[in-house]
Every structure is written in structure tokens, then in C-alpha cells.
Amino acid sequence: MPDLLGQEEYHANARASERRTLSHHGAAGKSVLYWLEKERAEVHITAHVSSSVSSHTVWVSTDGNSRPLEIPPEPNGQGSAVNGGELLMLALATCYCNDVYREAARLKIQIDKVDVEASADFAGVGLAASNIRYRARVSSPADDEHVAALLRETDAVAEIHNTVRKGVPVQLLPWSTE
Image 1 (cartoon, rainbow, N blue to C red):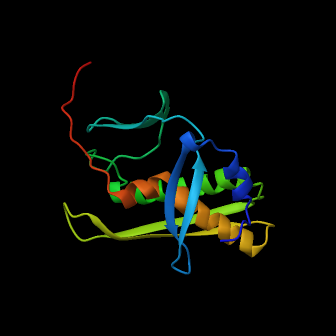
Image 2 (tube, rainbow, N blue to C red):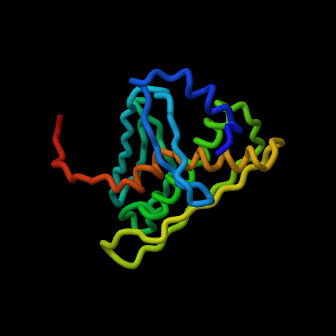
Image 3 (cartoon, rainbow, N blue to C red):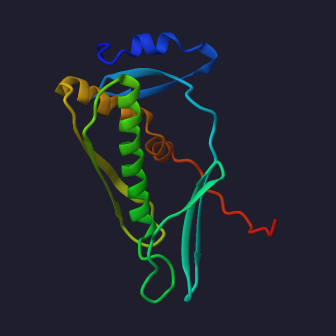
């Protein structure tokens, strides 16, 4: 991949101890190597749902910064009207959208609008998703080559996408009153 986005200059400033490598397969099927500067320390993210027939509250938190999220309850009051698969696809779409803006700012590419759509197939209760895919459209005064390179680079660094691709274990913990 040519150095269209200034990666060479950007990555030359990163110290070796703060680098990590991501491998991403470009459109031609060739592996593209990215050196990413460690931009921030690890963050802790939490989501919480409290559901009963009389109330339904949802909130999310990043490093202790909590905020409510409006998700309606099921009509019968038992659970959320939005299911986990929909929220997983929303997480993928939101992550990619936010990361396009982040990477565009880093690369000094003006973005007017981003549209992202994520989808998956769920074969039944208890079965993992399959055929997870997404698409993105960016409106920008930048030329098509720079926008395409921005989309590829964002795909390589999107944290939620990389988490799903890696298949990180999920652990059930006992509820504690602490």
C-alpha cells in the first residue's frame, strides 16, 4: 500500500516499546502490516441492564463515566425490546463510525458524513452468529483513493471488530454485593 495517508511519518514517531502489529488483508488479498502508536491507556467499559415488570433501565460506563441509554422494555416488561444480536450489530456499526472519524482526524481527512450498516445471521437459540459483515459509506471532499485507504485502515484498527474476529472468551461471574 502506498504511503497515501502519511503512515510512514506517523509511525516513525512511535517508540518501539509502544508499538503493536495488526495484520490486515487488503482488497488484493495481500497482507498489509500496520504499526500503530499506542494512543491511550487501557480503558474499562461496562454495560448494565436492570429489568423488572415495573422498570427498565440501561446505562453504559467508560472508566467510571456513566450515562443512561434509552432502550425500551419489551411490551410485557420482561427484558429489552432491542435484542442482543441487534446491539452487537449496533456495537460494530458504532465502533466503525466513531473510528472513521478518529482516524480521519489523525490523518487530516475531512469527513462530512459516515453511514455504517452491520448485519449477521443467527440460526437459533444458543447458537453463535454467522456471516457477520458490514459496509460503510463516507462522504468527503477527499479523493476516492484516500477515502478507500481510510476505510481499510479503520477496518484494521476497529476495536470491536478485532474483538469479534479474535473470539475472546466470555466468562459468567457470580454477582457480589461489594
